[in-house]
View 1 (cartoon, rainbow, N blue to C red):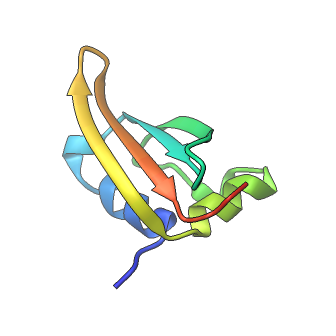
View 2: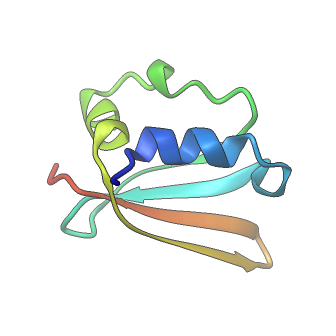
Length: 82
């Protein structure tokens, strides 16, 4: 079963471990489209750009989560070309 980027991030933001982590979102061509801090009150509908909404609504094609000196970062690839 495939999950959208929005659904994936909604689940992550409810987990204490990912509070205030960095999210970097890429399209199918590995172009970084958006990056932001994931907070408990992050509202994905409030992102104004139409491309933001397209990438949130696309299915997750792959993701990587790593922890370094900057904290946890989620790199999320959406199955969309923007």
